[in-house]
Length: 526
Image (cartoon, rainbow, N blue to C red; front, top):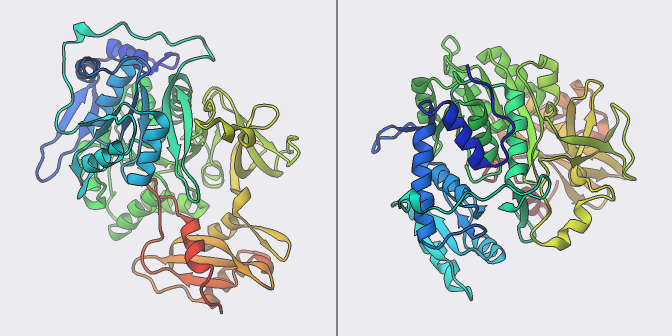
């Protein structure tokens, strides 16, 4: 069995070395649908295809440093196009496909994109039309290319030399990712191949996947988790099943047929699989599955224990963000308590410090802000003015997340600095209450928020999505559940809102609390 590849300098070098080691192993698998057959490419085939596409891009004027925006769902062509742009050394700006005119226009303008790749019409929306509208309003409009209709193709003999990686620590910016703006414009996050690969290698080392494994990408590949997973595939030499449009029933069928061993994406995926497993308790949902893994949203401890009890596999959860693709990651070698109550150990190379407000390091077991350094950290924002508040005087990134470093070095997230409810002058962490309420069988999902209150400053409000097949949670039952869990009386929500339908979520299925706050801030109570 070949050894993992953890020391490549660029994504293209990593692909070349993987192809040299295992050209004929499967790499990307499209399970197909009713109107399309199953497709797959090996590592070797993907490299040959990407080289031809790179030559095609070059013929269209894309050279090293050319900014290219792509708004593409999770498909083989998306990954091949991105690899082709990596071969050239273009500056890639991936945009999650739920973004629309306003956000896309901002990203295209700020990056000065010279080309925009779209899927044309996809999922009932005209992406090419959106890109053309955006381009029409710019002084130097980018060209628009339908990457799903046909990727550009030319003779690789015409390709320029492979761009050098640059000096260690001074590698060129090759990626601009955007964080979702809620009350302001999105933030452009600058990455190099080296910073993205450091995150992916951290993930690969923690998960310890083998060539015999079969992974899955059911989340938007344009998310920062996309290159994390790509590097993991290339470093450890295993394939992934790509889910372009997630449908739970069809995804499960594909995973069963193709022998997927690792699935997930985020907490909501865990609970969806768990819900189906409960409908067939005597038959494994996906017989080959050996773990669920993901990140992007908090994981209540109860989720781990429910999955372990009813599916017989662990949840190996991680913690990362656009600015630092990987921060911590659980490992299959961790204990049940470590997997349930922490987000894992800091990944290889990541330097994580839990800090007091003055920047001093907290003791083990003491809550503080997560501050981050290391090779996986981004190189700053596209708008340099944002860097001033983002980094402390030691160059560490201020994450805004609250956490505790356990005595064994594992990290437990406890909330957000901005997700603390101040009730009568007392700080209350929303996540602590959410973990308690999620354990109730009537709760499918929950968001605890602070709402303006004349008497209290803020009151604690629990917004609950009712679990399928259960009776809605009653206020009195919520209070009893909180008290039974030992919550102090001041933390028990004064208000319960039963949300009509699923809670609002972003592209990575993280609950959008700001939308709930806006909707409920002026609502009458009691």
